[in-house]
Length: 128
Image (spheres, rainbow, N blue to C red):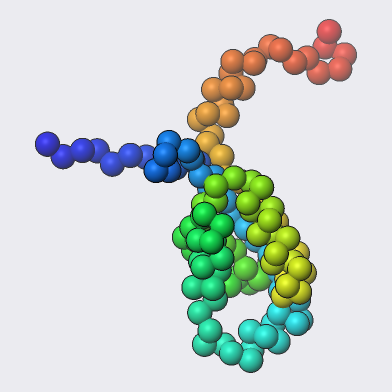
């Protein structure tokens, strides 16, 4: 009998029952970071970022160079938000990035269920 694949949620299982958070990180290079990248454009940045994530207990699923207000988008998993905060600190301290924002991926259904359970608990000003 073939098992139905599990749906991906905002959290994924870890070996000892703990869960990792899914994240999306967006950032912009400094001119110093771009100059370093241009010195060696063949360097595998996904491997470098993946190694950093592995050392932190996480994984890097995707790394994209993008057009627009941000230069880089990274998607992956980390043990917790504090780990991603430490990674942000490390990356910004390197001088390669001007800014970085960490977005935690959440589960719409779980949030909707919590909101439904709290329905009626909040009244806007003037509504009594």
